[in-house]
Image (tube, rainbow, N blue to C red; front, side, top):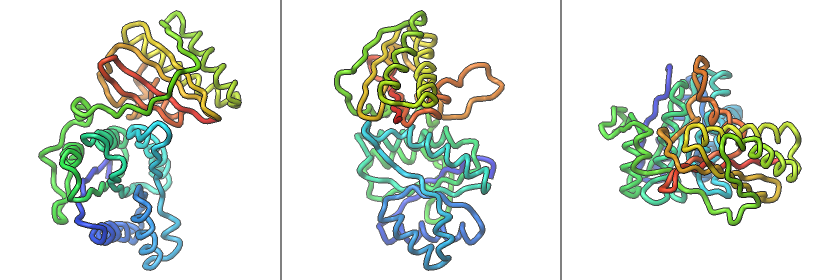
Length: 312
């Protein structure tokens, strides 16, 4: 396997899901393959119990768990996938190809399937170069907009055990034109609200560094997050209209920064694919995603917005 194999799988009920998903995982483990899971708790417990019963405790310990944590900002599919991609890149180096089993969770569906569209589109971009088989399990009775989004986001579909190409598949970035990334939770009044342009980028860095140090961030962590926000701010003024706005919040033990500009992003999923090492530009948001706990990009009629959240 030289790149991502992204497959949409349907199940008819809990018993069907546990049986078929478990069969796939057990077959992979018996063949010496590596498995990562991103499942609802009840499904994961059932799977681990079956693996333990048939292959033993060592096999259970070898399952890599990819947590799904919405956090205080609400679910961010691009952040979830960026985190998973970091972990999977390390796993691939250790074990070679990885099979990932992921499951739809109704609580994250959102209006019109926006969250799942973002997750699956982001996975198609972030994991494209990895030897990963990503099996995404959806219930057959899922809401029609979510089912349509799932079919459009997956290049392959499992139909009665046969994996075939999906005629509904679309380019992952074009999907978010119809279903933009979800807007994160409101933060309330910021402690800092700073309009800036290219000349005032030093003030941006100073404001971010001051907020981080005021929240007790160690120097190395403060420097990393300041670099991340500076990359975003620099992109906003150099590739946008030339002016932008920085807002900062300081919840306990954290700093949240947002950069807003009135321009529009050509790429709704920036910084998910690893940058070409030969390219002189295009690393900014990729670097920022590696340095922060959350980085969520969204657009609306007011322009482009980037939220960064970092814990000390």
